Length: 239
Image: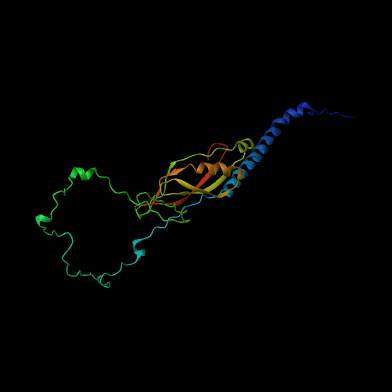
């Protein structure tokens, strides 16, 4: 005698509906892991390759480093010249003249007549400096390291213009420049230090030339110094 056992097996659409939710969760978890991996790698690489901004080192000298002052006892007193006997002046001493020798036509000009007389003209080829113009030559750029007591601060900051080509291409970059700040706080010269995107160099230099600072001060007087300026070009608007 043969016994038939009927087994109901799910297949087709019924089977897919039963396992769809399970495979969907697996796919979501796998996609999330891949997304976080790519994003984390991007920020990790950016953090590792980020360059530090240049630091302007200032050396502070202590009073003990100057050494002891020179001794006053070891220096000889300066010699003072003693003038000789004064000579009796012989010019300008009035001499009496007899009345017979005095000319009756001789007159003495008054103060009003003397003031109306024109002053004598000076020779143009003489040694006078009244018509000469004094010309002060501009000093050259300062050395890389200049000590100062008060550092220059920014008074006027000009943000660089984002290049249109870089904006359309979605490019970002960093540009580091140094500027020569003179004794009046004005930028006299801009020098490119380094950059990772040449497309931003021209915009950074043009902006740095328009910056204005308060001058650096050393011993109650302004001095010329170099100041480093970093420009960071970001699409989010943070520079």
